[in-house]
Image (tube, rainbow, N blue to C red; front, side):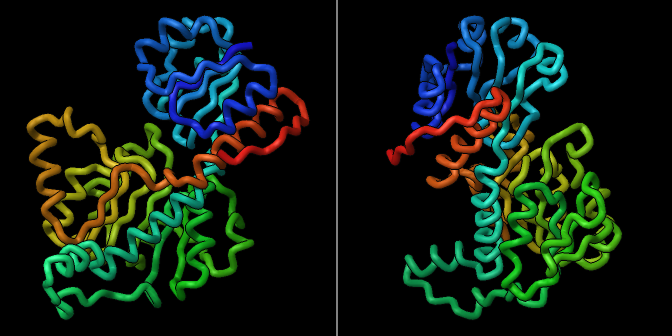
Length: 322
């Protein structure tokens, strides 16, 4: 059996696959176009975000048994076409949910205390204490929209902050937060009326694309802080920029963007992002929330365990620590 690794996975993944009898080709620099020319020879395919597993790719891979996703987002995979062909899709949201939750909290704390601006100023010997007076999270109401692996991880980490934590997930049955006594299961109406901070933890689907748009923001009863560490297209960037300009948003912490390839910006996008980058009440990062040293290993551990479940094997292998 042969497996193709198309991105920079932890060495544990290749070690684990080879221990299970796979011959692995580690080609982390391979392009999407190149994958399509060679995928016919593989039973397994490991991807991150640059490879689109669409119907065309699946048609070119008659031997393919499984696709491993280093992370959680499945919008790059045609799930229906994979199901038709009996190809197992193995994702690993459990592997980096804590990393994303910590990053969301870090961005929020940095925004609340003007840490990015204060750091830049102190390095220039500017000592502007009053200008950089922040606000405390204690006593604020934070809403977590989407309570899967990452949303749940954030809810758990908020336990010690003295905040009111509202949670909403359309697809989870009532009682999903029963083990988190500090969390209230809330309706969208309650969130719009009472939240001071909104943190998004949603997959990108036809339903969630541009969920946060001008109409959504218009339902808020007061200005809030928006945190998005999920998918860029869940929020309409034009609406976010406009809301920052009108102070409908008091601030934004964004790890994800609708276009994450600056060299491909259209003229309109370039102008839009230039406006976004001009705000001081924003904290921005390049889609790295789930990208820690620990999560890199955890993702591989999760994928290997799930592969064993699919193959109905209880595989034990020695751990390595590269």
